[in-house]
Image (cartoon, rainbow, N blue to C red; front, top):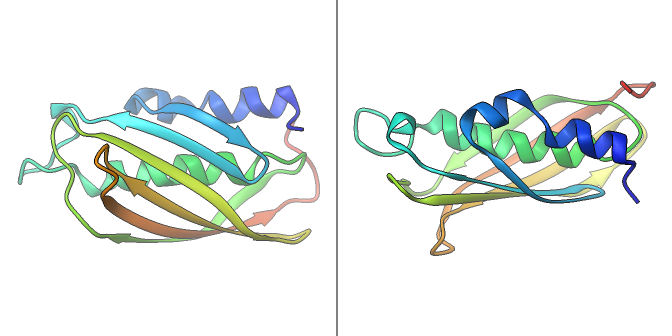
Length: 134
């Protein structure tokens, strides 16, 4: 079971709130969040800026990796953009833990639109610090 202090911390990320990202589900090693695309999140091609898609994937990555009583910090993320997203799309990202040991964690993230089309896929690794940041 996730400690409520950790849950409060990971679901109140100021940057995620600034972008309008809503956390939908959190379990140990797992997170799901979404964003509805507004005009200010588009690029010059009138598609969603890649940084927004990356940020959504990064938010669920951060939440999923910090669901334990040990601070985890990202050390690498690789993202692949598969399809464009557009104004008014609702994008949903899911992060799932693939492997965890006392020092490292490896996660897989997917970002999809409301039609369940794959927008991006990403992988990330975290380093787990010795102490909790609580």
